[in-house]
Length: 285
Image (tube, rainbow, N blue to C red; front, side):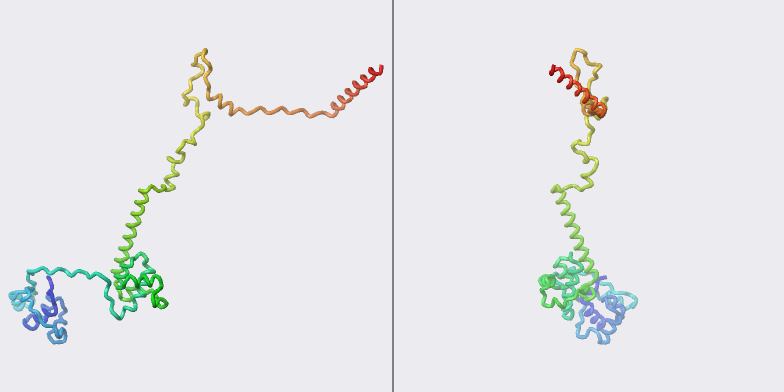
């Protein structure tokens, strides 16, 4: 059931011009029964002029008479001839009472320290301030910078916890989208692959350097014709085993020279001396 456009004005008119109970008027206007009783006593809504809901098309005379006959019945609003648009949220900074405006720098400092991901526009909506003020507090050029202490804006009553959580979540989602977009752009640009992809088995030896040498491959896997099958009149083909034998055969070690004996050396010297003496004697003769 839709409520009247001006609840207290409609309640004033119904109390003054009908015999409806306080509960019936309170339920229709969206007020408390004690508040309607205060209107009847003149303690509440003083100076408010009553508005006829029948003239505005919100109620019908038959509906009022039906509820007056039975106190247990409840008023039902008449179908509106004109649709009233829903109120649009106001854009711009939130209104801050004069008594709490001196607390805004503390709230801004708290938001800048604990939620740096929040943009200045979002901070301005939460606290009800402007971007130059936020920038001055960030740069510590505010006229009252030495006395600013970070305080939670929810504790100061400048915003609700639901509004703060929604703003933080919105900023986090925006950062996540920006990160994914940057990763996608980097992937398209052709950046280096991760280490686990470049050091796998498929890319461990891309040029085949780790393959076995020719002399290490079994002979049955080589497409080399056998010597027995070749024609004896033709020259012998070059075999891979010859190359492997040439490289694998180690050179023969040199024979060790015999160690000379002292007695044999002196014996040779004596023989040479005897031969020399005999030659000199022949020359004298």
